[in-house]
Structure formats: C-alpha cells, structure tokens
Length: 339
Ligand SMILES: O=C1O[C@H](COP(=O)(O)O)[C@@H](O)[C@H](O)[C@H]1O
Image (tube, rainbow, N blue to C red; front, side, top):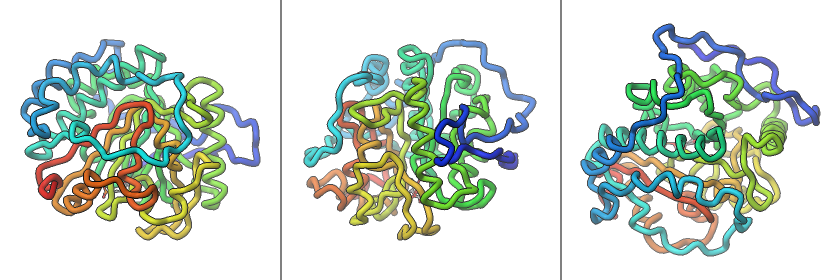
C-alpha cells in the first residue's frame, strides 16, 4: 500500500499544538486485517521454543531470554537515570543472541517485541516504541503475521522514529515510508499514534518540532521520562557497518550532544545528508534497547562493539545501551562470525 498523505504537523513555532502531532491522515486499511479484541499476547511458549532453536551465545540465553521479560521490561520506569555515562564498561556476552538464520532470528525478535509491548501495556496502559530505518524493518516482518497480528494490542502502540531522513514521506529514502510499507500499513495502529516528522520543515526546524512533539507527549504520559529525558519503552535499532546507530555516526560531534533530545544533522556521512536523530542521552534513557544486525557486512563492527570499551563517540552502537534497562542484540551467524 502506498504511504498515506500526511496532514500538516505541528511546528516548533506553534508552542501549544493540538495532539496528536506529526501523524498521518487515516490511511486505508487492508480489509483482511483482524480487529484487535483485547486478547492478551500468548507468545511466551512460542518465543521460548524459538530461542532454543537459536544458537544463543554460549547457550546462556537459551530458553530463558523471554520468560522473565514481564518483570524486567519496565524495570526502571520512574527511576533515575544518569544523563550520559562516561564509562559503561564492556558489553556482556549475555546481551547477545545469535541465530542460525534470519528466519529464526525474526521469529524470536517478534516474540520479544510482543512480550515487551505486553509488559508495557500492563504497566502503563500503552506502549511507546521507536523504530529505525534500514534492514531492521524487514526483520520485524513476522509481527504482521499470525499469531501476532491478532494477539498484539495494536491500539495501544505509539510509534516514533529514532532517526529520519529529511525527505518527503513518499520518498524512497524516508524511514517512515520504509516502516509504513513493511509493517505499519499491515497492522491496526491508530494513525494518530504514528509520530512521524514534519517533512515540510527544514532539517533544523524538523528536529525542533519533533522534540516539541515528544515533550508534549511526556506531559500527557504517552512517553515516560527519566532525569530530564524521554524514556521510551522500547528502541528498535539497527547498526550500520561503520558502527552508527540512529543517525549518530562514529566521531561525529553530534554523539556528544546532551542539551537536546532530537538533533539535526546536515552532513551525514551516509546519504542522504539531511536527517534528524535521537541524541545519545535519549537513547540511553530507554527502558529497553533491542539491536538487530544481520549479515557478514556487520561482522567486523560487531566484534569491535563486543570488544574493549571505546570512548563515547568512537562507536555509537557500543554506547547505545540503557543506563537503567535492558539491552539485547539479535544477530545472525554471519554477523557473529568474527566474535
Ligand atoms: O541510515 C540508516 O542506517 C542504519 C543502519 O541501517 P542498516 O540497513 O545497515 O541496518 C539505520 O538503523 C538507520 O535508522 C538509518 O537511518
């Protein structure tokens, strides 16, 4: 389905915009979508068996990765987080799940996302989830299939973007379009709960506008807060072969920014150059961060990320972890081949 037309979004100049912000007009829905009936997610059994089929680093996570999820998924809600840690220590191998192939990885990822969503909805009545662009969206494809299509409480999802290219929403480079085509057009999330950027603005203004939008949503409780930053229930991140995540690139000064939630970037090393991105403290304030990395092209970088801790800024994907929450890396065997 084509991306829907977008109505005008709030702008930073309009200090008190009406909710919802930055969201598309109601798109046409596929007629075969099952309406959600409030059935609780029943993914625990399937997710555990899927994890068992995965390689699981040193077997640590086999069969246990998902079972305790409800208790930790929102473990830090309302608690203090530090604004940006200077030293985080080495990433732990138990934060890594290795799967034989994409099929198994995607199955386990869908179960994981469904469980985090369920825990968030039980705790807060809604689920704030943040998407990235790139290969991640394809990996989330099983969420549009049975049993998740029917069992997930999609009406309670609120969807954001960790980074976005400043292009029109129907442009092939748009992360919104990628997510719409691959996931969002196939599930019944209310259109007013998809918080896309205002693509009519300049890069600078779009970043400000998105920050204003999120600030307003922290006031209404759609997004939590922690120590002056928004605290999303789940960030779903990809990693570029250069180690970037969101649009935070290695050695770029933007990685050090602390006084903004959303930052503009006009010289992205990866095209297109004009983007907006979550800043690192916002990433680190999340309750859950789930990375997905597939393929041999990510192998060298993954080995670095799970190697010695590097200074903040050298490898954003290494620093992108919750200071008070849960990190999991879902990777396939080729990506893990140099670990
Ligand atoms: O440019 C971007 O790239 C990263 C990584 O993409 P991948 O295709 O290598 O997985 C993505 O996470 C980010 O959102 C996107 O803007």
